[in-house]
Amino acid sequence: MGIGILAGLALSGPAAQAADYLTARPSSQTFYINGQQAALTAYSISGNNYVRLRDIGKAVDFGVTYDAATNSVHINSTQHYSEESPAVPSGPTEESVQAVLAQLKQTYPTGTVYPTPYRSTSGGPYRRGTHCSGWATLCSDAAFGNLPWRRVDNPSWYQIRPGDLIRYDNSGNGHVVVVISKTDEYVKVTESGLNNHARWGGQYFKWWLEERPGYALYTRYPE
Image (spheres, rainbow, N blue to C red):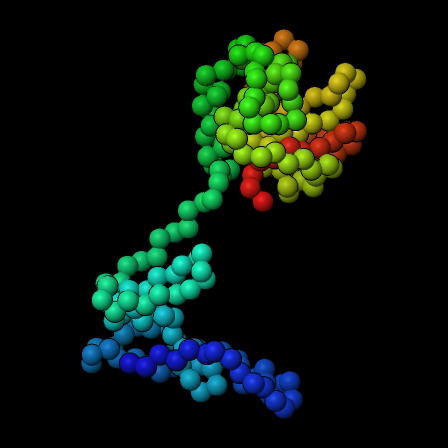
């Protein structure tokens, strides 16, 4: 079985002809492997059939792997075909962050005094370790470890994710909360006040936050 690889084309003539020349259309041809009909999805491009290399590897049984570090494909005729493993997240996910926050809620339910002052080693924006900023930093460190911090001033609503810290100015020195979940209209949060007691389930509306002076976001999700 021959496998064609399209390496490059030198085009000439009208643009419309070139576009039609490269148009991929589903192929109506039937494929057989060792005399047995094979269900392969193929596309016809410029009169040639193109089939996914992985589909061929699975049908004929040879190894096909991809090396992201070198952006290269490896074919090994001495190995059996195996399905491609799903990509492993390179950092915390929204689900993993929410799981950590759920565990913290069990450990420090509403009304519980959290360990204060909380002294973070993650190099975040808050050093005092008390009140709302101490609790917010404790939650963030539990979810993100020592990942670096990033500040986003006047963030758009779509940028906010579970575990992020939202701060705004108030009559004191400002207030900061930890996002648990988000809808199109509001965020649910955990926060603490001057008494260093954890509180869960508060809601802050989008329109209200976006009108606050000093409205900013601290996030630690990798860019």
